[in-house]
Structures are given as C-alpha cells and as structure tokens.
Length: 363
Ligand SMILES: [Zn+2]
Image 1 (cartoon, protein in one colour):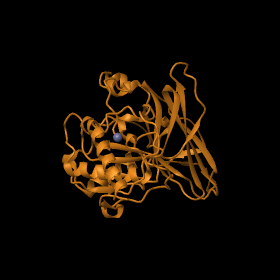
Image 2 (cartoon, rainbow, N blue to C red; image 1 turned 60 degrees about the vertical axis):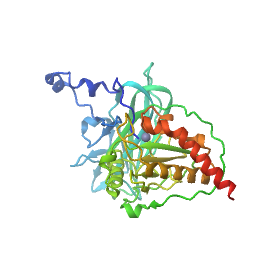
Image 3 (spheres, protein in one colour; image 1 turned 120 degrees about the vertical axis):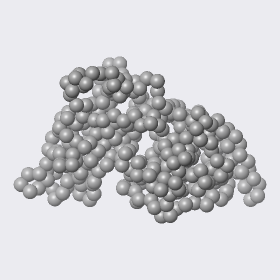
C-alpha cells in the first residue's frame, strides 16, 4: 500500500516547516487541513475535526462540539440540505489521481455526497466538480497540482442530520499497467486454508460494497506493520482499524493478507471493490505482511507457499493470465511491494502457471 517517499516531498509545507521561523509560522493563516507523510511514504490530506478555517465557503451547515459537520437546525428541525467547500490544497508536485475516504454517519433519509475538482497544472483553470463515492477515486487526463473537495449534506425528513467527522484524500500518480487484459485458463486449484473474518475479529463494513469482476491480482507488502510487529489476528485488526479510521475507508482495503506464519486472512469478498491500488476496479489486493524494501524483511517460505497457492486459486477461478499478476508499483508510483518481493514476481508467475497447467491436465 505505501507510496514511495520522494526526495522532493509533495508538500513544501511538510519539509520546509522546520525551516520557517516560529514567528513566521504564527503569522500564517491556518491551512484548514492537516498533511501527514506517514513513515511508509503515503501522503494523506485530512480535513476534520472541522472549524471555520476548514471551509472556503459553506451554506446551511454547522460545526458541532467535537468538530463534526452537520446540517443547521432551525425551529427544532434540520434544514433539508447544505454544502461546504473545503480548503483548496496545493501540492508541490503533480498528481493525476486522488483517493478519497470519509468518516461519516449517514443512513436512511440522510445523505452525504462528495465532489472533487482539480486545478490545471499550467493554466490553473478549475475542472467541473466530479462526484466521488465515499470510498472512491477520481482521475485526471492531465496532471494537476491542486484540488478541492465539496461535500453536500441532505436530510429528507429534517428529523436528523448526516454527521461528517473527517475527509481524507491521498493524491497519487498512476502508471499505465504493463499488461493487456486477456482471458487466462480456467482451472480448479484449492484455496489455501483461510482465517475467516469472524475468526480474526473483523468489524463489519461501514457501508455496502461495490461489486467487481476480478481480472487483475495485485501484490502488496504491509511495510507497516513489519514482520517483527506481526502478532496474528491483532495485527489484521490493527490494519483494518487504520484503514477505516485513518483512511476513512468502509473496511480493510485488501481482499487477502498473508502473515509471516503463512496464515491467510480473509479481507473483503473477492467480488467487492477493494481499496488498495487505484484504479481499484476489478483488482484483487493481496497484502504480504512485512517490509520487503532494502532487505529489511524476507518473505518467509510459508508466506511464499501460501501466496503462490492463493494466486493459483484466483487465477484459475477467474481465468486471469499470470501476466496480470502485478506488483502495486506496476500501476502506481510507489515502492510497494518492496524490491525483493517485486523481483520475485516473475518466478512466482512461472510457479502459478505450472500449478494451473497441472490442474488443467488432471481434469
Ligand atoms: Zn501496496
């Protein structure tokens, strides 16, 4: 999952913050959002807890005591709709995709709609607003250096209001995948023993899944936690917690996770759209727990065996050619799944091909 730390950070503010004298910092207006460059390199822009500095413009919304955003109330009733334009974010390097997450409460008769617009890198011209799902992504045909988020709130009956606690946006850069989607071979390879969601203590998803038809298998490493930090089911719970609260996703982002002990954990259903490698559509995300960059961790024999078994099962089940087994870095500017695991992918593809050929010849 993690994106590559760059020599030149996307956000001048992060790197140069240390160089700006405190007196000058105090004179700067608040940004209206916070920037986090995680130790694994991912750059997250977070809006919320909200305050007036978070907004550029707003209409019929109010901020509650915990910095939550709701509709205004008049005469004991919530107004039926309102909106807010959040602070515009400027990055110091171009991006062509944003991934959005949100921590919200909505429900029957209540609604939250998210929209994003971009400002062209050269002309500065604004695009029109594009609606993005609560856990969704939006891509551009030309790189931009600035984006803005708008949120629309709705209450059909005025009895209660949607509540928005935070919106999280990750700007990133796509890479054209080095493959053509073509049918592979259908084969029945058994799924390795699976630790079901109920067995590892998964929280239920916060929203309905969007369906997909898998045609790409994307391999990730966790980076954080690394193998030394792995503690079985508690680690998978921790990853889910981080995805749902820090990222604002509706569930753990991956479909499968593989512990250093070779335990295979169930994430999202295979036919549910994931959140791991934008554009996520039709990709199954498999996270191998560890940090496989710069020789920090090594994929264990048990992990590798389960990875090959899982990839063979999925490739045979969905007729996915082994050329469509990708590392995360094949479709996004990131160092995931780490240099050693990435370098092993050609050999892993060969082993999957061999497993599928054997399964087909045994039919
Ligand atoms: Zn990844």
